[in-house]
Every structure is written in C-alpha cells, then in structure tokens.
Length: 373
Image 1 (cartoon, rainbow, N blue to C red):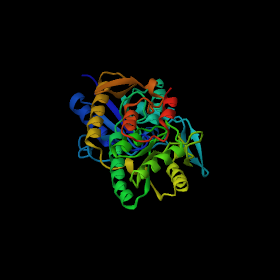
Image 2 (image 1 turned 180 degrees about the vertical axis):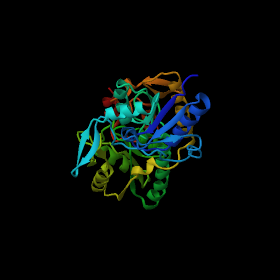
Image 3 (image 1 turned 180 degrees about the horizontal axis):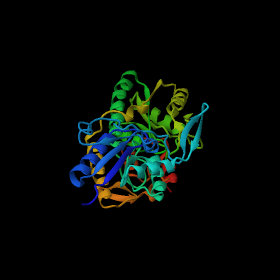
Image 4 (image 1 turned 90 degrees about the vertical axis):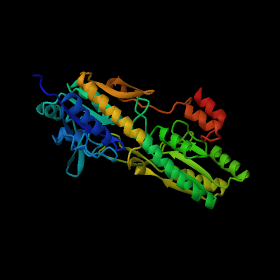
C-alpha cells in the first residue's frame, strides 16, 4: 500500500479574515479527497523552526469558517533566515532555516502549505531550494501580492473600511466638517481606492499618486462653493506629497519589515485646516480593518484556495502559489512572486471610475496624465 501523505500548514504574516476558512478547506480536502493527514504549525514559520505544532482533523476545523483571525496564530517576525532571538535585552538575528528543514524531515512531511503575504512567500522561495515541498496561498488585506488578481482578506477589509466611511459620512454632514479616514495598505493603494469609491469618498489619496495639498484644498473649496459643506477624504497609509516622503509611525526592531507606516492623515488634516480654515477631523482605522468575520466572497475564495492547494500537493506540483486570474484558479511559481509587489496601475479601471465620478485623486488631471506617461 502507498504511504499516507502527511502535510503541514501554517499561517504567516499579519492576520486577516479568511485564514481559518483556508485551514478548514485544507484539512477537509486533504482528508476527504486524498486520505492525507495534516498538522498545523503555531505562529507561522516560528512553529516549524521551534517544532511547535498540533494535529489537525475535521473536529479541529469545525465551526471556524466564519471566524476571523487564525486558530494557529501567526507572526510577521519569524523569518527562518533571519530569526530574532533576544539576548541580553537585545535582539540578534540567526539563520534557523536548518532547524526548519530538520523538523520538516523529522516529522515526515511530504509538503508544506504556507498561507501568507509577500514576507511569507519571499521566505518560501529559498526554502524550496533547501528541499521543502512548498505550496503558497496568497493572503493580505493590502491586495498587493504579485502573481494574483486577488488575495483573500482584501474584500473583507474593504467592507469594514466602507462601513466605517458610511458612519463618518453622517457626522461629517451634521457638523459640516472635513473628515479624513486613514486605512492600511502599506505601499499599495488598493484598499484606500476600493473603500473610498465604495464609501463615496470625495478625495482619495494613494501611494501611487503623490498628492498636491493645494489640489486637495481646491477640491474642498469647490464643493463648499456649490453647497457641499463637508468633504470625505480617504487616505492610504503610504500616501505621500509630491517631492515628500511617507510618514513612518515607528520602527520595529525585530521585524523583517521594520517600517510601520501611519499618521499621514494627521499631517494632511493640519494643512487643510491651515489653508482652508475649515474644521477637520481624522480617524485612523488601523487594525480594525484586519478583524471580524470574512465576507461571503472571501469565505468562498479562501475555500477555493485551500482546496486547490491540496490538489497541487496531490499532483506534486511543488514550488507554486495558488492564484486567481480572472475567475480561474492557476498556479504561479514562487520564484516569480518573491520580492515583488503589485501596485495600482495608473490606467486601472478603478482610477478611471474615480475620475468619471468626480473623485479627486489629490492632483490635477493634467498631472495624472503626466504621471501615467
């Protein structure tokens, strides 16, 4: 008889709605369709480095489809090639990839399914070279992972941000204020652009289009001149002024990506009040957009991803990431994903929709055309 295949699974990077849905799909598909056994590693790659895992069966994943977060825990600091160790109140970074490989072999794993964003996938490529049979599943609220049209978690974050914008709309109208809502997204503007359009934002600022504060104020004054005594501005945390820099909230010493963005909206708010004399308020949604239950779209996408990942394992198509192209699931080599980012192209349909509906992107149309060319 053929040996029963044994697979591992982990969730890495920042959390988002839909992680549990993928885990559920992986476990159920592995057991129902292929008679595989599954173990889950705690806190991303850290669990595999430190040999910290649990067995996963149908009971383990029962009732978790709609739950946010991840039953396995996650970490965005556990890069196996630069693993943080606290020594005498200071972090040092060690290459623990050999420990990871040893534990993988000791446990008799046939494959490892990693669910994560660019950091997780960037580590996955080199691990393939060390003999780990990797399959990736794309996750991030930022929707900036190269190689796929959509990451799960994005739709849920858009829904949460849009609901917040809807609520802020009413108080903006009541008090005749300029209201600024800052959302996550790092260096890509997908979340700000999508939620800003869905929430009826008047001005949307994204990292891909450096803004002109004078153009922003001109839009606000234009609205006021026609009786619109409030304005809604949606800002991606990575937005920056022309010729300026992104605002860094803080640096995280023991993280592979040490930069934490945040606070650009406060700077913009202060400038708007000074230039327009209009009362301005700022709301930074922060980690709110990471939480809560996944939307129906994300539950379905995450489930499709999980099932497809196990199918790739069964066919021994290792070294690939599951991806969405149009409505179809495809596989993309992990080597093509690593170290790349998917930003909003300036000819995006969403940018065209924004312009057609009168939304300002923080620059004149002429400037936008210049940037596009």
